[in-house]
Length: 292
Image 1 (cartoon, rainbow, N blue to C red):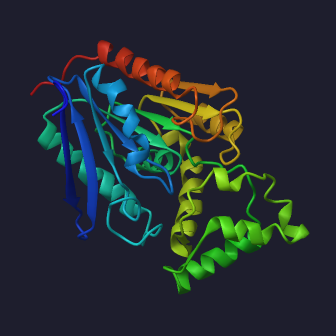
Image 2 (tube, one colour; image 1 turned 180 degrees about the horizontal axis):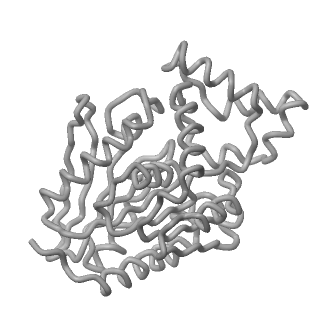
């Protein structure tokens, strides 16, 4: 307990027996629940500081570790298929829906989490009120040469669980002038937590990002999309083009100046979170409570 806020921490076992670690902050009589899906190389502890913003606004706040990250089970940085992420979130949503007894759910997806949230909606999951995309991994800033993509695809088929450290890989690529031009930034170490990612995971990420952009029109629920102007990983202009194509009539695009990829960890993160909460509250005020 923390004042009038109940804090719960536990584990959820998925259909394939992967243990998912979660943490919930539940104020008295919450108006809704917000589930945050973190990015690659991250875990829920990185976002621990955000809970107070939401509970002060009478919102339950839910964090969990994606499979292969943080305290959850599974091989680090590996999935058999991207569908594993979608199924995990789907199962968790229904689990929290049954146990928290709140009617309205919003999702915040950061980076990889933004891609997961996008593909979930495009796959027909419509039981959430709205989504906030924070620097979603839809369009990467750098170009991966076709030959490299083919190698990744081949390795994904033959040695799917084989993993590499992306920092070391890019540092190696930078030694070759013909490839260096495709990776035009010098702060890779500030983008990724230095974990290993499997060939299958990398191939699935690239494939699903292309699908997300291709099926932009299938995104029909309210969305707030935020990117940092100085993001060296995500191509904000192309993400904006994606948002312009989504079918949702309730959509908002925001670019924050002087901020990079870590939108929720920058000096301006408090203002960003307040903007997110205000966006959610505006929609809560307009919608009647569902019948029980």
